[in-house]
Length: 193
Image 1 (cartoon, helix red, strand yellow):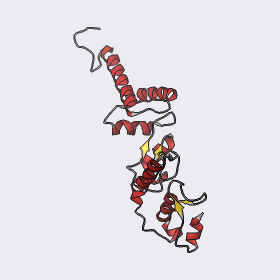
Image 2 (cartoon, rainbow, N blue to C red; image 1 turned 180 degrees about the vertical axis):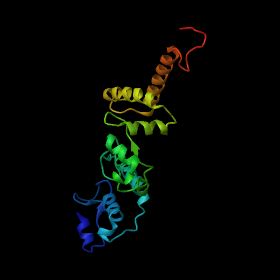
Image 3 (cartoon, one colour; image 1 turned 45 degrees about the vertical axis):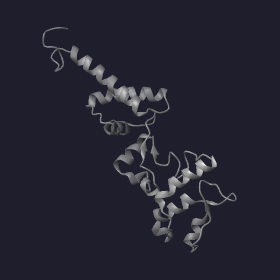
Image 4 (cartoon, rainbow, N blue to C red; image 1 turned 180 degrees about the horizontal axis):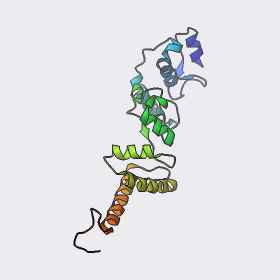
């Protein structure tokens, strides 16, 4: 690992992009380059690398070589800034630095994402609905979240289209139920059942 060497005064590091290089064992460029500004006080070193080009460079190398980047690869993997666990989603929504020690934009990523799946919590689902322009009251959200959990148990991921479909279905059921309840704001006023 070259980082202890940098801390000890080394000013040159041999590295590879996506682990592709002339031999095994070279350090990951993206990990070394991003460790330095992330822990600047500790390492006391910097580079002239434009870090905003890291993700783009990684994708270019992947396209040219045909070697896919594992989704869980630090810094450049598809899941590097993705959060599915409810506690992580809640933490990221409240204080991003809790679970992201670097800004996704610093490496050329468009941002982090909340992946909706069976481990997602209420705050993550509510935020995604808000991002999609859907506003629901607490009662409707409770029913929607129950439906979400059922759907998420059946499917690995719940995409935006499925979440919107679920939202429309729950809202439609709620309106139908309210319109049948005498005295509700949506009930017909002509005395019809």
